[in-house]
Amino acid sequence: MRKLTWAGLTDVGRKRTENEDAYVVDPELGVYVVCDGMGGHASGEVASAMTTEEMHAFFVNRLNGDLSLPYPGEPGATVGELTLSNAVQHANDKVYVAAMRDTKLEGMGTTVVSLIEHEDGFILAHVGDSRIYRFRDNSLEQVTRDHSLLNHKIDLGELTSQEEIDNFKHGNVIVRAIGLKDYVRPETAIHERVIGDIFLLCSDGLSDMVDDWSLENVLEANQDDLEEATRILVRMANDRGGKDNITVVLVRVDDEGEEAYGEEADYEYQEGDYEEEQEEEPGPPSRLRDESTQPARKAFVEDDTQEAPAVSSPSFKEFTEEDDARTAPHSPVFAWGDEDEDEPPQNAATRPAPRPQPPAPRPQPPQDMRRRTAPTEDLPSIIIDDDDDEPTYRKR
Image 1 (cartoon, rainbow, N blue to C red):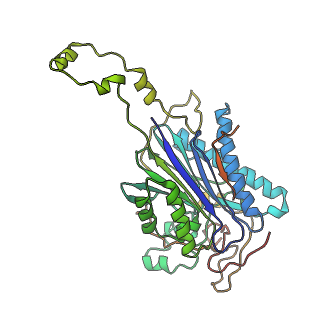
Image 2 (cartoon, rainbow, N blue to C red):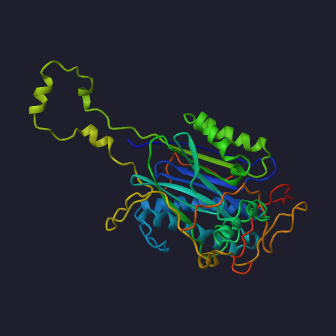
Image 3 (cartoon, rainbow, N blue to C red):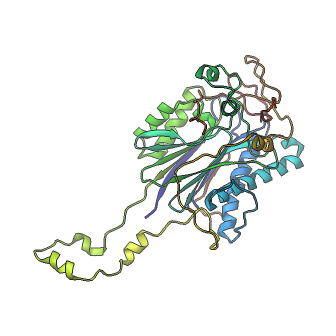
């Protein structure tokens, strides 16, 4: 029997006056989404809330028979990846159009990380610097890669040493976000389904404040109590400064093995029984066994004409300068001031950045749904995001 256990928590933090994070969880559809809004005033909250709502509505519509996939995907993408990518792009359209219609919302945007159940695995998608981690065998691994200016320069070969990376002044700027252009390219990956795995979806209000080692230790000590783990993680982020809103969603794989064949499981064998069994013709599996191996409801309903994709190992698609040019913002957006920091690049604002690591060598909603709504030269234009150390607040 397939089973997922989840817990989620969001908090305004110690420095902000409003919570611009949002998340949505629908266990029946197998949809889990976390967003970190940006834009100042009310717009960041609007962007994150709208993205969670529209992504969820996309999967509800598929369940109700709308199997259309109008947006292009990556070459070679599986049906699952294409579907989740379409959900993200659908939400991007809604946020972009809303900002175009209302001048008060101009420039709003949000990051997004999402996970859906599909076949014998999970599909992941993200835009921006919110993250997904996977905890397996008491070891934590980040399975998304931040869409940051720092990582972009590393990919271009402009930063090659750890010293250059550490001294880069604008590592806390992101280069992709939902809602700032009429097209966005989410990055997708497929992960196998392994009993005991815990996926951690979070905004950078957690990952910037709490290092990976601490995250790993909390999950190891509380892997049987996800509610407590979320509370501890949020408290740790606040104790270490709480400079931004904090959102945590944990999803644990609690699948059970095949159940026994009715009363035969408790039968005590007598001498001679084994030989008797060997002579019998094997019968069909019991009804109990058939039911225990039925897959849970998928995050979407597939078109019967489409071939079901096989689950592959996690992979990330390389992005090109042409791709980033398509996803760059259409105009300068917004910034929070910080007099103590160096002047950022034009059209950019900063947010606290974790110590980066160089990449590998380049070669009708259900009742139990929960919602909390809370260029330079060849480089892409910069998407503006939240400030870090001492933000100047804008009241709504």
